[in-house]
Length: 184
Image 1 (spheres, rainbow, N blue to C red):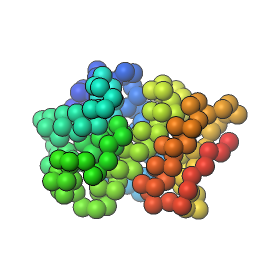
Image 2: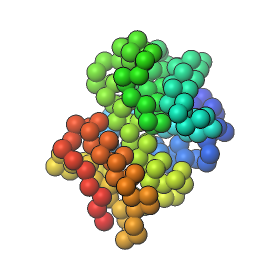
Image 3: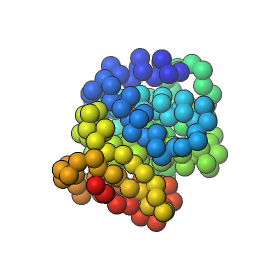
Image 4: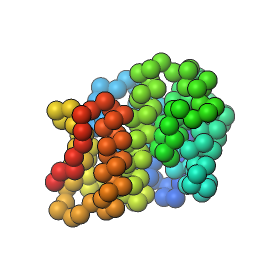
């Protein structure tokens, strides 16, 4: 699965190694994940930029359909849907869209929430970094006292700060947290 995700995802991404950077970016949100959960997260990150060439209004839907039907090996239907839903959310899609209910029903509620959290984290990462892997290394996400923190390692202003704050709020909501902050 991981070789297939990288082989399919990297040539289709704007920056070939953004998926690898997303793996490191999203890791702090999933402490104690199982080997299976980590494998799915890595695959989703490697595939997270496959829709950038699609029309902005269709990226979420097209990515979902592309990934839910792609013949990846070594995963079951629920795992395939997990990856597709995570990338769908990365492009701004939501679970209530027509046509997703039947597929989403293959996931238990916890796995469905995990896909949403991963998608929101990737969405935040892409907005924050502008798809530049090196910029992701300048910040880290943390969960502290029911809040999601975007901790910056520099005193620079947050690029595109209002959309970044909005994506951070979306991530906090997906995690069921009380709020979010950007801290230095």
